[in-house]
Length: 266
Image (cartoon, rainbow, N blue to C red):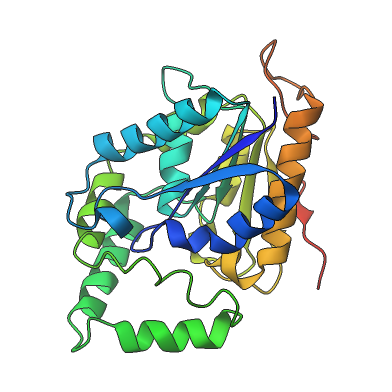
């Protein structure tokens, strides 16, 4: 049975942020699907709750698992939710996890400051869309620039989603994860603040830093991110076992807590 991939988007955006990855995987003959979380994309009218967000991930994973081992890939909020899901008390049918741009605990002063900034931008005359477009034009290649906005921006959901994320016990969840795990961060990502903690909690995980990228690593360097996805698929296919993993669990090549896999300059 071939590896099945489930993608989970970040806050404000939708499943369309994964268009570059979906096209790449289709060309590779690898099955993949991207979900819309409640309050986002095709589900913009729904209220965001942690229960429904995690249920959305679970439903997609369990459906994919009927066809093969599942690689779960989440970005930002989607990465945090995916970590909480895979590291839950009940082990889901996930064979590997890529958690991108999310090595930060969503709590305390950092989260409060983020919410203050988001509210301030939302009070601008166009709700910050002019600023958002200028940032995307300055940082994202033209071929992926429209992917984040294609499903619409969940502006009315953002603050609710941020508040809900503070209820996640990420430290406990990450420490429970035994499947192959990759943390992928952009070199200049603001959410790298707890990177060392996440490595200590999951010492079998690989940390991949993508040079010259910010938080939007999947769109800024899509070829590099696609290569990471392909690496994860190959690792699951190989069925390697990580040091310290439970019997029967698979993992990829091991990196020690102080080591980093850094994507080559391109």
